[in-house]
Length: 617
Image 1 (cartoon, helix red, strand yellow):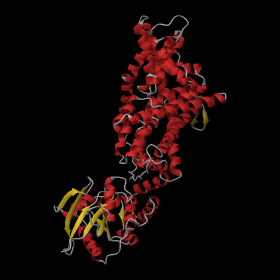
Image 2: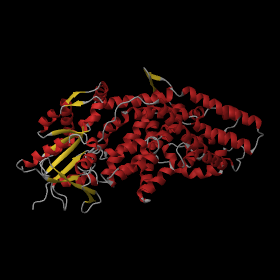
Image 3: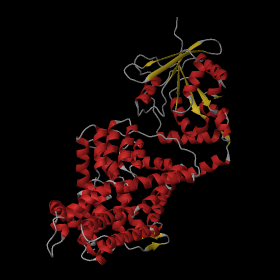
Image 4: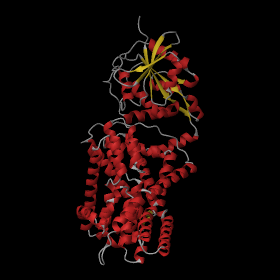
């Protein structure tokens, strides 16, 4: 007795495939594992319209026959007849989401090229119609050369027509299906064909969908898209300076008033010095940057809530593919713009271990929010606040350049890593585009509140503790008359060893002293510099002078530029090192990461200092 024909149910994730499988097989299901892998095998029995039995196997969701995960590899192997212990299917039922034809038809076209008998289940047509989308299945059937049956699996609509079409395909004379040797069109070509076919099959769509499609024609355009993304980022960094000027001034005035009151109320001594020179001077120098951080995150939250951020991921995927990175690395790297710690943890979604390791190693190069206080302090102190064109400020342009430098540095590091220590072939990345929508003000407000709380908690814990410890070490023993306190103190003596290493790249004693506590968190560099200059102040007028003004008087421009270049690359954050150790389960990779990033920071700072000095800046 011949075994029942094997029919495979295939399709993209979230196409409603499992619901259709359950509707077709009911309780006649078995669950096991494919031989040699941990991927589950769901199979069941169903009867065709004429009563013939069929064995139906529900294959794992896949985007293409070029697998990037064990699930997709099983789907590829079963369809091509290469899965151990599994028959090659006699026919395929390909499930597509009617509301997302552009993406799902890409896989259909790839499967159709194999030559297997096939039926397309145009699933979830009710949801598509609810959203104002009407599709002509006959157009799809004519273009694909296979039956296309509208279905609603959860309501058991279209099942009889699907069974009848499948029975007809199985009754046809068997053709010689192509195997793995069949040429697979490039992904970009398949996507182009899928979009053209989807456009032909759509009879009518709601105005909102047409607007979304029109926006995507610009946002995802290979030329206009990157230009649009660059313009958005440019405006964002301009706003960080121009919009924050007033609130930053208010906070500076507030801390100056607090320091003045504390100095007036408290007698000279340990407590007053600790409060004025340590806590208020150090922590206040960091808290003053809260408005700039909130402006930056306002843009990020709005872009995420509007649906544009995924479009940006699509655009960046092209760049990352050229340096051997998986497109799945984009979301962890994007998270690293807030903080490298959650970004590194987000790499757990990357299946390929080499892709994941590469992403972990370059995540600290993304310009996290902790670098922003350092950047804005130095830019405000040394870059004139002047306009170089309509709506274009020089300070915002420099900040934009620093972020771009971090991204380019990460891409270059990935390129080198993928050809050396993490050698391997990068995998593709397929993503579904969410709808455009207006961000809810309440959601944006909640996100900003959470970011402000996180920042202020760091200011009140890590930064405060580091600042107080630095103040203690920099205040004792007391320097004799005519000797700088920051050089005579315990901290000053410890900094001499660091200074011997960084002096060739233009760093002075104050920077050397600040680099040590900045290992706790990058923002501590600002509070440390503020504390050192507060301790070294010779009179009340100098102590009250803004930190930007004091740096502008004390540092040459090449030193300031070298300091910026250092912070583009330096991995100065203990939390990042600790989470890298946890995620790689080894001290080898955190040590490698710290070594190569410090080497990059030293070379970048040195090249910047030497070049600026040679140019007479």
